[in-house]
Image 1 (cartoon, rainbow, N blue to C red):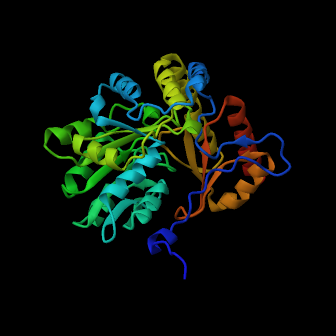
Image 2 (image 1 turned 45 degrees about the horizontal axis):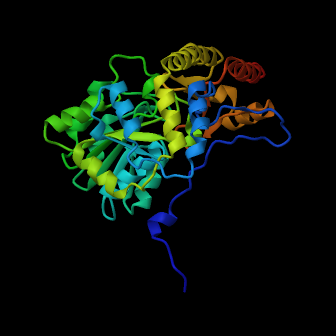
Image 3 (image 1 turned 30 degrees about the horizontal axis):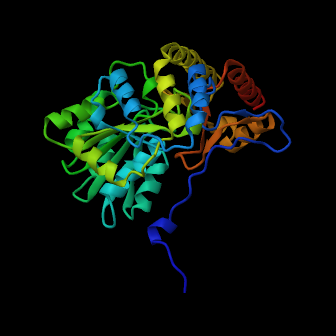
Length: 367
């Protein structure tokens, strides 16, 4: 006999990161992981290097300076901010703390796979709700919720489709859910949304607190807009009760000292933030427009990526993916996506975007 993990854990399909290498290709254009190809602020790199002299010592377990900086940047209460080893670690801890065997965890069918992993790891039952095309259906989430629903994960903007919901729809979701259900707003791509109708979720957290509820949490990351994916820095904004719970299950020293210094510097460099946003704001609509003109089906949304389908007239997503790989370009296949497979393509630097569009154009023209 040997030890056996819980059955729910053995059902987990491990997260598969975007590929970064192609055999026989010296220079690969990697557009598969939604990394910020503009790179981090030079000030963040400098701060990270300067922190090297202190790596013999444990970091501040509360990351008080970073929490204060985040609070100042977004007008929040520092005591209601908690940091983590990437926002996905916090997403998992929330499920670990609030759900277990016999409980249900809801999320849309086509979304970030870590939600299902978190549910199964906690021993809970993951429940995938139907989409409206490539859009999140609030009605489907509400229709599936019941007294056993402990968490609802909502990526807004959604990954991999880029679709995002306005504040009114998120409010409708929160109003329609049981009061005992925790709504987790994953706002990893919030910085890319330039729409006054959108909310990252801090106002919903504040409203819940005002109403005496502890049932809304927002998570954010430094991996996308701030290009610190390799350092694993995330944070959450939540009511005091949820912060207390997360503090109990969060590993100590979750964010390293060099990572905190880099995050502080990145947050302070507003000019780099504006340049990064401007690059994405220029290229995302340009990529979408050119793909649409070529006959591909593109989901309009926000984020640093585009979500495209290959209609039957242009073959299959596998054929397009193989063609791109032949040109040294790696994108992210989303084969389970109904009604047919799709590809997610990160917005790169200008020359990378041009190379991708040239390859897509050559493929389409050959059909």
